[in-house]
Image (tube, rainbow, N blue to C red):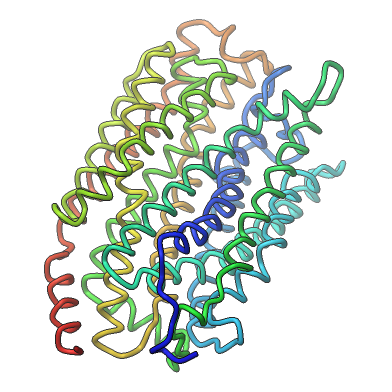
Length: 479
């Protein structure tokens, strides 16, 4: 089938593609939401916080940096470093199934199995062995995540062959991303249903994670098995080696401007997402059973705004709306830093956070697709894999830094609870001690606020009008 007889890309095809995002965001959500929560903190009977904490080292090993914070940060950095290599491999690939789909098909099941193993295998009698096991598993988790997600993200630009399709596919995958992340927060609730009156909460949690990972594997295989890449995309392998391709990507001025803001954004939002359960239970004193309801509310608000973002982006421009998203997120983090107790605060934060979630969940990847398309038109070399990998590198750099800083800031609060209550929970603490514990969490929210404001200012340097104007100009010349 030649490039002149390619099948048309339809919204149905884009929805099928988006199912894969549900799968990998579910796995990512399990790790980002529950890894720190289950393996660190103070465990009390009937609660999930710190339930696996006895298996790994908890005390800081360097200043206030915990071993667990260091392990997860190294994992993210390892993931970020492998991104350019996988991207270059994918860009230069010439497999029968295309440049992207073969990677997705090969990595989906190992990706899911590794996620389950993170919560099952590190349970030996040796803490040192458990530390080593969880480190190795997180390296594998991030490696398989890269092998699946880097080619997957490259398809955003390649299936988004028009501006309409780019915004549509970004909208669809944002929907499935939120759906996957939201399902991941259901782990304790599912565990409660599976446990039974005399069951083990620890085993029920592992079983619920296993069920979710199986669902994720199926979802990731849907686009891998259904989409015949060469039927829709004229895949031409590039010749640039990995470092040359990476240098060319970062030499793009507009892409660099985008990435500067993106690093800051992911640092801030990861700091908030990692601490969301703690903010709700420690600052607002909301029972952990009710946190899922707040996540559902936040998701519903975000999804209700998707049509508006989808329609407004072509009219107002993506840049203006993204800047609004940055400032709105900053307001959400600020509210969290000064919040009081009670469900009302959780509702305020959930509703407010739904706005920037809709904006920044859809439009940034469309911006990367714009820059990638312009590069292809100007150079004749389609390096969309490397553009998305470079963006992912920035994302994971921000996430890694966030994990270290969050666990370092909140280590003092965990130590106070351990020392003063022996694991009895914050409910039994005096007002003075409760204030001491809440201080580090409020500090984390303030850091996220400042970071988002900086990100907004940096993104103002991104020149969307110049990019879109040049794309239109080159397309007219090629007709």
